[in-house]
Amino acid sequence: MLRFLLATLAAVAVVLCSPSAAGAQALDESQPADGAVLAEPPEQLVFTFDEPIGTQNRVSAACNSNPYVVPAAVVSADALTLTATLESPMPQGNCVVEYTVTGPDGEGGTQGRISFSIRSSPVTTPGVTVDPTATTTPPTTAPAADDSDDDSSPSPQYDTASATDGSTWLGRLLSTLGLSVLFGALVLIVAAWPEGPEYILAVRFLRSVWILAVLGTVLYVVALSAAIKGESLANGLNPSSWLDLLDAGWPGRAALARLVLVVLSGWVVLRPERVIDPTTQLPAIALPTLAVAAVGLSRTGGDLAVLGVAAGILHVLAMAVWLGAVVLLARVVLAGPGDEDLVHAVRGFGRISGPAIVVTVLTGLVQMYRIVGGGLFSTGHGRLLLVKVVAVALMLFIGMTTRQVANHRLARASDLAPSSADSLRRAFGTEALIGIVVLGLSAGLLSFTPAKASVAQLDTFAVERRVVDPTSGIELVVALEPGTVGTNRLRVEVTSPPSGLAGLEVVLIPPVGSGGNEIVQSIPLSGAGVADSGEGGGVPLPVAGAWTLQVNATSATGPLNASQSFDVRNADGTLSTSDIGTVAPAPLATPAPTTVVPSTSTPG
Image 1: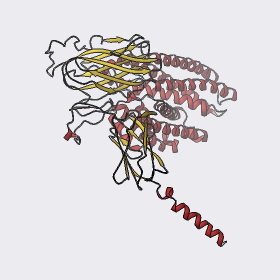
Image 2: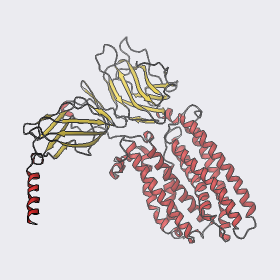
Image 3: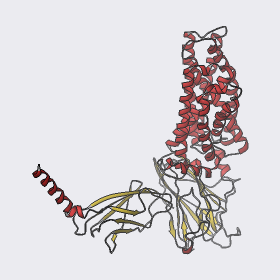
Image 4: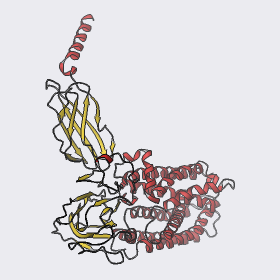
């Protein structure tokens, strides 16, 4: 036993005293820190170790899964710090940096990695800093060296139209589905089936759809808050980032309100009899009603915005009554034979579904006229809307047929027979399934920009240039305001493709001989959506003259390289030199200039 202990102690001593163990370097800290979220790209990568390091070291990086070249790193005089000074800004997105350091004698080696994310990637020109993240507002003036700490820049502004990823769509669908079914089921219970809360199957059903609504709404808020800032879904899991939705207009605020209201609706779901109790009926039905109404604020742009808000809220409320009640019938009321109260529930559905269908169709037509107009076949939004119209028509046809059969079978029935329950359950189940498909299409429509909405949102811009490329399938509009010397608001709206867009950038080339530098704006859109620098911010145009606008991007079907000319006027709106004035700013009353790019297009 003693011999074994001595051998063990000797082995431990060898390990502790070996050069490689004694000289193992552990990372004390790094700049940027691991997991940091940076407003701008770092100028240096700095690693500080607890033990001296040698001179044979290596630092490599990759951003957005693409390699990034890191210059040779320098070791400090005390051999504890390794610094790599970056020659070009890292791109916006997620970056991973790996390092390998050796011991002072050049032997051994320690490896590690850090990761961080960058919200924007400025491109520096002489005297000017340009922020290529079009969804945030850069400083209104060119920052000088002593103004780097100035906090007077405008607050960030976001646009929920840029949220087109699958997580946002799925969250929007699950949230709307859960809320609609919950609200419609409660309306049917109040209107025609007060015995519903006495059924354990009905109580379980209400709690299940409420859980679905909560999970879907949380996913929607997380994905939306991440998407509008161009961050990963994991960054959106931080509840503090959800407050950025307050800067995303009414759709963003409505998403937060929806989350609060759907959580509060749990008070009703825990005891569904509250919706039929006169003392608690008003707040019990008000909470899910307001939660569904918040869904109607998902899109507030376009012509006649006030009418659109009212029509949108009525549309989702009526749709929820229609869909939620039919789902309750298919899943609970008609689950098997029963007493007379089940017959009353089916008959009551016929009474409330008729007005709900009429309101749903009429408000849908109002919204179609208001934001689509004649763009049903010319835009992706319009074509998807046509598919939705066909699905609604099919749902309406099946629903009307089912109601006729139900009225015939239950006209004089005092209870629900097994055969009637079985046949009606299949019919109402088909209607409900088509309704869920319609909700999926509606969630997808919010990822597209309607034809008339895009025109209405651009009506304050002095310069508007439209690019259409049949080969790559890219359609977009670039707009500038006020189109004069100084800082100009920049807005880029992509209408096609809905996804798969990469490397979108806008290059502004100054007049020949002006001595100015190109301004490159990277646009954080991967498909249909809007990126807007917001009021008071954008790109600085230092000289008047005939500028060139160049748009570069790549889609799944090919690249886009297109250019157009536009005038930048003096601050007073005049054209004072002879080499400009060839392209006057196009008023919105006339068609905007359009570039149709052939398949052999080359950079302008």
